[in-house]
Figure: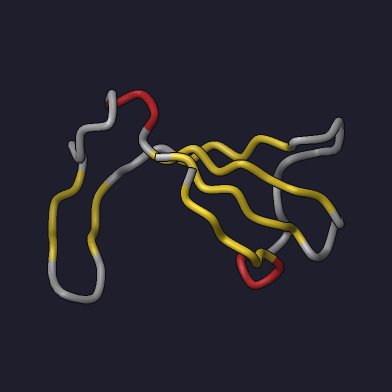
Length: 67
């Protein structure tokens, strides 16, 4: 899954890749319920500019859009 968002702290667009190495399967999730899931799922941040892609805080991210 790919999610585009905006990092308000670094003033840049980011792409968040979730579970890319699982070939779009929801493997690695151990527990499901109606509010959350638990497990080990790789997350990669990619800057759409030449900046450092790693955000400081989750609360700095906004304008999420699934791609």
